[in-house]
Image 1 (cartoon, chains in turn yellow, brown):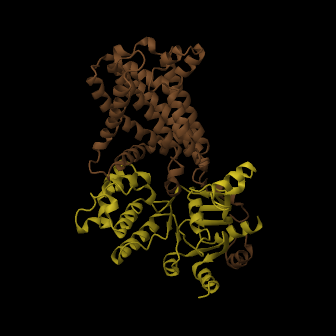
Image 2 (image 1 turned 180 degrees about the horizontal axis):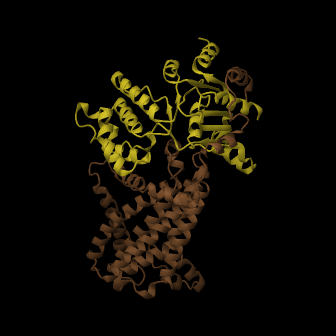
Image 3 (image 1 turned 90 degrees about the vertical axis):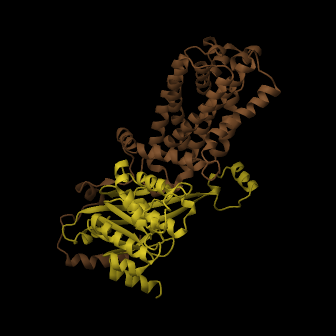
Amino acid sequence: MAEQQQDTGATAQAAPATPTVIADDLHIVYRVYGGGGKGSATAALNRIIRRKPGGSVREVHAVKGVTFTAYRGEAIGLIGSNGSGKSTLLRAIAGLLPAERGKVYTDGQPSLLGVNAALMNDLTGEKNVVLGGLAMGMSRDQVRERYQGIVDFSGINEKGDFISLPMRTYSSGMAARLRFSIAAAKDHDVLMIDEALATGDRKFQKRSEARIRELRKEAGTVFLVSHNNKSIRDTCDRVLWLEKGELLMDGPTDEVIKAYEKESGK
Amino acid sequence: MSTVSETTHDGAVAMSAPPSPDEGLTPAQLAQKYGLSQSGARPGLFEYVRQLWDRRHFIAAFSSAKLTAQYSQAKLGQVWQVATPLLNALVYYFIFGLLMGGRGSMSNDVYIPFLVTGVFVFTFTQSSAMAGVRAISGNLGLVRALHFPRASLPISFALQQLQQLLFSMIVLVIVLLGFGHYPSMSWLLVFPTLVLQYVFNTGLAMIMARAGAKTPDLAQLLPFIMRTWMYASGVMYNLTEQLRNKHAAEWLINLLASNPASVYIDLMRYSLLGHGFNHADLPPHVWALALGWALLVGALGFVYFWKAEERYGRG
């Protein structure tokens, strides 16, 4: 408890600090079926007969006791090597992954920038814009209102009427652009971006970076996961460094990134 | 926790900062002070219903999108919505109608509509259960990426099956007309029957969705359970008549005739077949049974599903 109090006290120095996200000793555990052990049917039967239920279930402890407080107006970067638990932490903050132990408190509904999962490749771009918008919680009127904006932003129709074709016919770049445009069409209280910046061609990247800056202004707090230290430096004023699911460091961008680069041997 | 680097680092900053009034509060107290709510906590039952109502457009759009996507790679496209049940009916006609002749005391012009009604109505319940069991486990990506009341998924899948059934009903009407069953007032009974069956199916899909989220193996087991249920519900024969011929106990006959699938199938047959399927063929208190099953399974399924709301998505 002692270090948690110190932690909240330390970050509270950011002027009229209103907390928007509080993580309190957060643990996330994934259960993976069918991992480990021999994969054959006889091995599985053997396990059932011997009554070892844990045989084919493996637990992955992805986030181990993370505690921090985020304040209104902050842009927080998350860094760490692959598999260090960054994306998992974001999903837990969004309330999408249930916590094993500990709690996350948030102001309003944090949202993850991403609608990929709601879209269907067999549907036309048009229908996907509507479906994606509704999936993010927009009303029918809001979707209708923003429809043209989304299509124009994605630039799908620059080379002809592609929006009325099924999404499976799009090139991977076109599909990524449409997905980003749909996801970025909504305003958010607490916004989380998971390495979404590097999609599309150069022109589109510029446009999407501008849009993210806009979203940052509207949102209370922004979290950004990235392996690109430069984009973290450009956008964030505070950085959390995760390693093996533990919070290794929490502080101003320059200090943490310097330590991170030293550690990763650059 | 690696608190060492954290505290030394933060301690340095804290010294230069003026003492904050929030210092000394635990995270839980701090959250309470600023009115922060717990992320991913399960909302109350009424709040949950309200959230679902807010998502009604998504539920409708998702189910029709799934339905459209089903045949979008086929050249004939949406024609298959009607062609699939039509071909199904044709196969049953060849096998049970032409090859084996009419069953029991029924002539062909009663038996074929009787059979097709049974198959379509049972398929509605069957595919709702099958879609329900994969509603969460098959859409983990969606559950882990976006925020919405999870009950949207099983409800939406059951709605997709209802839309599918409405296409099948077009075929059913053609079959009925073909065998000389013309529209009458009793056809109106189709609507309350469908509503009740939809509520029942949605409840069933929600029960299956929670069970399937916890135990994905259920998806492998379910087809066998459903097939057993089909034979116990008199889809292809008149159950009561067959059991009476075998001198089964009366309580067993009543029990099997009161099972929900059988109740909805019989009601639909009674509504559509007119002279071929009389009131005498219905089990006693059939409307009460239909309503009771719908309310019981609908409410039970909803509460059962909601109870685990915050746990969906752990895979």
